[in-house]
Image 1 (cartoon, helix red, strand yellow):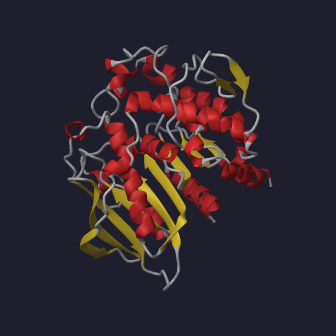
Image 2 (cartoon, helix red, strand yellow):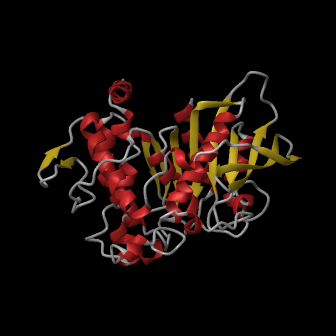
Length: 357
């Protein structure tokens, strides 16, 4: 009931306040201190309601954009013009190779997995399945190659969902340099491209456009969250080995986030100094509230130390509690390395299904 009431309150808050860019305000020195809002003078007031949180959330998005660049508007939006290049029968579903326009002069490639048992007029959930860092890109989640424990796109299609597995730029078939077309970060280009993947799902007659989820491991794990922060159409997120709080990432050395594959401004403008970087992962996790987030964070992950994931949970859970949605924030810590074990994958699939029912 509280979730429904909070959702109703959010409906009364202008969308441009919840999701839009706002004028830059003084930074937040403690990115884990989420239940406060600062004004232009740096004075703090408590966050006690969804409406209060909408203001803080807008600040989080604005501060993230200082690093990643601003989300484009209509200037980059073009007609999707989806083309099906080939189709393979995978038994319980069809695997379509598709390409579609994401912005002027750039077409994305993806596998679109469509269950064969969908009846005329029936609509299913749509899921964006984002691959890890692997040369074969989209092929891995679609079960065309790669590691068997990362075929989550195909596994979800077998469970009856419509799944799109896009190539991230510079992987698979997409050798695209985002900086040559004016993007300030590869991360924001990825967000835009994945929003266009959601557009593809919503354009399909067999997809219920109100039931959209995103899932990914590693590169796909953080990009599923990035996508949902900017796209309110994504109602449920699964992130495996995708993030932790910056002070815990490589003992506070965030250089790995600053190369051309992510956000170069972390180094060029903020000097990799955590005291200057205007956002951190506890804020991005909380920015998803009250929507569902399932996190698989193995205890032996040597990339995203589990202590930093737990720090994000501790900071974000009170925000979810404001919405009466603490149950929508789920963490699993298997005894594994940088991996997405079968038990956690199955838990994640059930989580998505419970969120989108």
